[in-house]
Image (cartoon, rainbow, N blue to C red; front, side, top):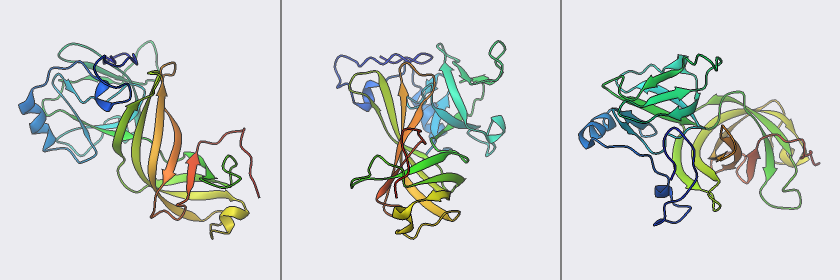
Length: 245
């Protein structure tokens, strides 16, 4: 069982290893308070109120956070890496801090009676991603590189799943963003994609948290119909891939 405040990837005995419901948080749920905060949340936001922490709020992933009755985000609106969720009634929720010995980026789950709204974040402005075909002889070779310049819609979690070996956790996040084309080979040029132009992307980002890692990383982004690059996928830059013409 994976408990709050620590990452222990072990399935429950009665559920399949890859089911979302096999990832549990040990919480006591006050149904009336959860229903109350739900009315103040956007579709993509995850609730934290009193002793209740939504099971999709997992250490190792990025979130933006606001008090549910305020439009203003904490931490100057920056996505923050969740480090731990404590136990007890008022659970200490700690985010990554520049000062390890005196962390200041934390609050308690019951410190605001209105509760908190967590927004999952997979892709950020400034991220660079290589473009790969999803079929053909050059599937493992980059045919261009993009840099994210604008997030055009909120990011929404679609699914959370344990790996078959129980040693990794994958989230699928719906993403909408605009990216600048930093480079393009002949394959992208044939799709009328030019360097230093902007492209709108709609896709599902797969982010993976390994048991041995402190943070989740982007594995790939499947681009969907509606993107000018539909038929391609995006991956983090890797020295092991090279451009193909």
